[in-house]
Image (cartoon, rainbow, N blue to C red; front, side):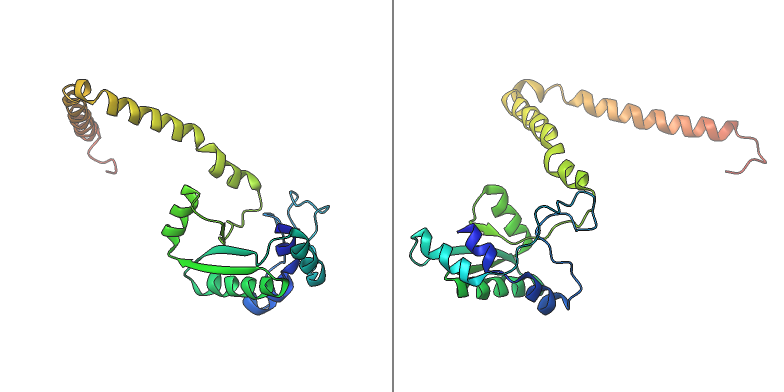
Length: 191
């Protein structure tokens, strides 16, 4: 069914209608100008006849897909174009228009079939990979610390006033440092 949906889409038509022909039609996170682009995986042209064959061969009567889209003009229009093109191949797309944070929340919970969301546009994939994978140790670390704090709260809460004392001591030390530094500066030196 994914192949049928892929072949039902006319990416160049989307580019012309929604983006006035200013976009580079692609099927990868990196543009063709990027050294990380995989030329052996080019954009397939629309093949509506093959898409219809694949839908028929799937044996699924009336295939339906719910697609979440952001409630912005261009995203909604893109969703409508995808919906129209897929319908020609026999695939019904039901659009679910959501506010951006609601869409992200549902994505994070896995509460969706398909989601239409943009890409950062970074040429170097490292920035995207780090954002997606680099935060995992922090998430596990913070989760562990939060669990420990919750499990041991009754024994920790009485000790936390020492943290307040430490913060006040650092503030006082900072003020004293600035005061002493200012007093040692020669009168003709800039402030």
